[in-house]
Length: 270
Image (tube, rainbow, N blue to C red; front, side):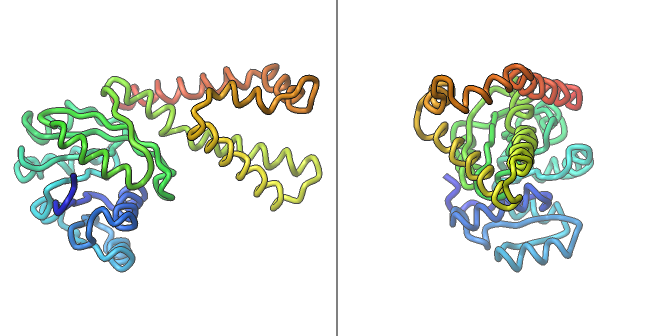
């Protein structure tokens, strides 16, 4: 779907750089078909050295180069970056925005009502090729544009298509979710240390346990409750631990955390 089309990234920070590296690593796009625009010359030189892509400090140059424009700047500066580029983007270029909380109608008002726009919400594990990304089309974006966006983000993980009204829920679940998981992982490690394990051993065991359990949930097709029951013997160690989690409101706390993050996303978007 991407083929020989050229892609420009406006912004080459943490997430933009991760997606660029994923595309190059997956050999989905040749380095010479990618360009990154960013005001930080040092970061651009390092990215060019590592990936072989073209770089520039001129956003307009990047847009003129590209068939697909990925907006990867911070949400609070996106309007000031995009509005001067609106005419150059026009209706022929596909625009993909990864700016959290910036609505499609705002993007279309800055670029033009007939623009082809896809909103995307990738998350932090994209940096290691295991991201979870939700996308939604807007404006004149068609099925080919959606397929192109999916292919791009599939290079750094897994992609799902949602309605835009669900993007705040996506932000709360998969966008903020890694932080919740890291907190759980940290607690597991500390628990291991408290029970007498050396910290390095506790970290290795806890991280692999989390990774292995997630892989089982993703690939096995079983409901998480069924997988939980397979570990839980009558009167055994696991049910004793699960009873504590239930008593402490673990399940409810996770649900409320996702809901609160989603609600904050709605506030920021408005």
